[in-house]
Image (cartoon, rainbow, N blue to C red):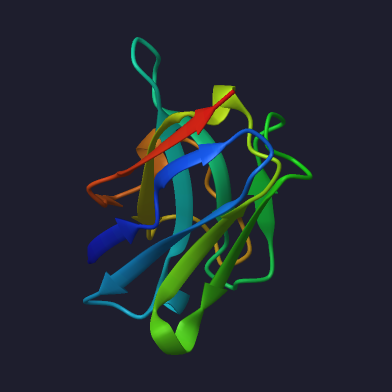
Length: 126
């Protein structure tokens, strides 16, 4: 699976961005997809994920109520809608695909994911 993440940029606090992750090689319904982020000096952390079934989603506490993950199987693309952005959301965002989790489960650990995109940078100014 090849993953291409895009949509990052510079936005003011309170603004919105939508990240996209286009996949090729396998249809998106065969793997769970997640978004992680990493800021300088910090470990890569889970942000949001969606199960292989597309029914279940999971979010980190820091983004609940502000971020929404969704998937368009016809386009093999997963989206991360980010609203009410805060300076602490500044990071490089990575999309990732994992094949090991059960159909309705959302993987949330780094080692549950098999393929990673190149990352897209999000900067939120105060």
